[in-house]
Amino acid sequence: MRIVAGYSGRVSSVLFRNIGTLLSGYVEKPLMHADSVFVRDGVITEIGTQPEADTIVDVRGATLTPGLWDAHHHPYFGEYTPRAEGFNVVSRTVRSGTTTLVSAGPAHQPGIYLPSARLPNVQAHSRAPQSPQALARDAVGTQALAIVSAAAWQQERPMGVKCYAGTVIAETGLQPEHFRRMAAAGVQRLKFLRPLPSSAECQQMCEWARQAGMLVLTHTGGRALIQDTRSIRASLEILQPDVACHVNGGPTPPPLADVDWLVDETNCVLDLVFHGNMRIAQHVLRRVGERGELHRVVIGTDSPSAGGVNPGGVLRTVTLLANLTDMPPEVLLCMATGNTARGFRLPGGRIEVGQPADLVVWDPIDGSVTTDMLGCVAYGDMAVPGLVMIDGAIRMHGDPRAIDARRMPLVEAAWGFAVP
Image (cartoon, rainbow, N blue to C red; front, side, top):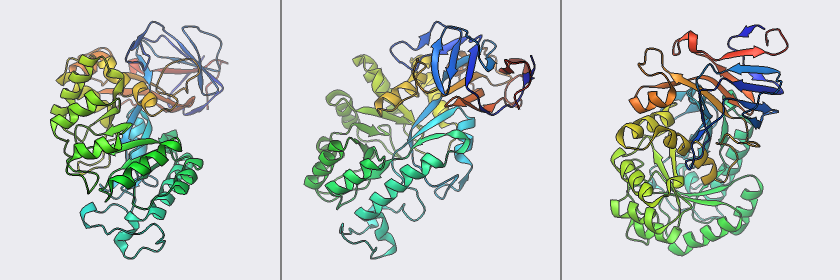
């Protein structure tokens, strides 16, 4: 049997064996007692057994987890973002162990991102922007952008990444037919991002979105989302979000009393981001822990943002929070995987029979004094992927600059010759 280095591709069945630590993706029970996972046709089909397989991945005692999820990503088209002039960001994100992105709205698409305070209101029927700025506040335009984004990212998948890009930014003039059309085209979320004039219209939009099966997301930074309300809290009470985005700031958090209201008086998903306030993130984790509601927390990057783009931002946030709080790293990693999938009602993020095979093998970076991924995160060092799989396809195998070659996962062809 020959060892294959650097293989990238999909075969019908893969057996991961000799797993040292296996994470479930469930905060309720993060660690699993099994040393093997079997994948067939892109889906996890067996755990703890070792059937015959086309390809065998010898994990060599390393850690196997679901691929990380970025719960707060602003997609654009392709591998370039004008916000931070980032190139190949998505490919580097996959190489950092993040396999899935959830859109918080296409706010950084070229020609779209503009400061909200200077944007004019445009009537829904106005198909031709009255000025270059009007494009961002046109109901027809925001509907079109959401539909195109959802469709484009089904086809544009650098390194196989999954990007759930179907999020529409709320704009004045959206009507029931818009929501029906968007839902049919795969748009799954409505995001309140920029201030809108009327509480009544915002309530109506939320109702139409939910009737169409969409989740309601809200910006929860330092500003009101509705112009006829006087505070962030008043806006949130009207919108009643399913997901409160970047509750620890994007770039600034809401007042602490408003954060506590979200934790105590709603059941919404609470999004903590890398480009945010870590003191507030600590506070949120403490409060949800006291309430026994760790399943509500998800982790994202808010990239691209004023702080730049961070392909490894999800794991870095997990590592920071592991060192700033008493939360076990395995629980934080489940917040960055299964919690996000469940919170957004999407498949994946869990190592479970029937779930998509989006898997990452992890080891400490070469030179770390730690010996496994969880110890590495708890210590504050950087863990690195030795192998990344998405939908049963091995998308990345090994980085000899980052992992000791003696610990690299071995990919073997079960039929006795090297996989091409």
